[in-house]
Image (cartoon, rainbow over the protein chains, first blue to last red):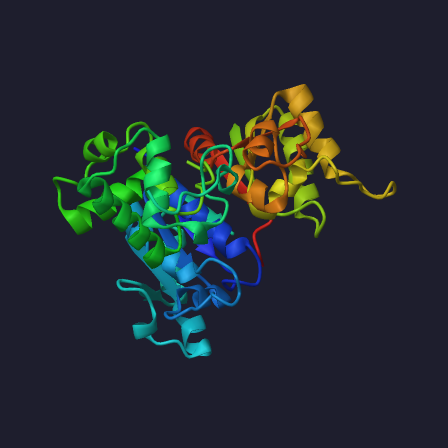
Length: 119
Length: 108
Length: 131
């Protein structure tokens, strides 16, 4: 049985290539049959926002690609509740099935997986 | 066949250099060079690939393509055998090439 | 113990890349096994042959090369990130009609190689996560 993996994303979607690289890492791991979940901390919750338009940026749309995660077998997506509150992001702007997690829940998550990769 | 693109429009692997050059006629042209005669069944998957790209801003790997086909077309068509019959060898890669999607980066 | 490393930081910014190289060197010195290091995102710039560091700064690439030469550590650059960061081996250079820019101590490969290493290693350690 493959080891389970929690990929923690910590950066906003377009400030650098890091958000994309983290998502690619998660999708690839899932494509190789690892059980993978995603945790968005701090400004990384901006990656989850609905209605991103990257046309003028000339970049690929992070939220759109995130929506393909379920096709790779990634079912669990967690978002930092405190960061969501600070940025005024509501549940309806998040992907379907995205769960919010407070500090205690995040601590618990970090202890649930065999492996953690923070990007 | 109308609007055949010159050879210079394709790279060495036969991918379009400019994605905006794509048209159904260009798809025919690419498919011919891959030795594939496009049928309605091919077009069903090619349209789905273009829909995948429109929706997810990414070229799918095989696993994601199979699931997407299963979700949109049902179990009969959402399996790798079916896709391999239509696009022998590497369905995701060849499908992307004919559908005018970005060249997959060989990550998987 | 058998380790796998994931390096996300470029050697050109910050200290994470060099820290990772020093950590790797220390691992093998203490008798641990380091069969593969996977470089992802800006970390792939580690394999760029054209980088020149100031003479009075430590060149992380030299440390990585040493691991490859003396301890058979495989240095793998993520293919998607490599393209984005300008590191091309002969195959990719031909594929994209450019020139080769990779240090021969490194190889280009898919993320599957990270997955494989993470499944076989006792520990997977990441360097260069954003803080």
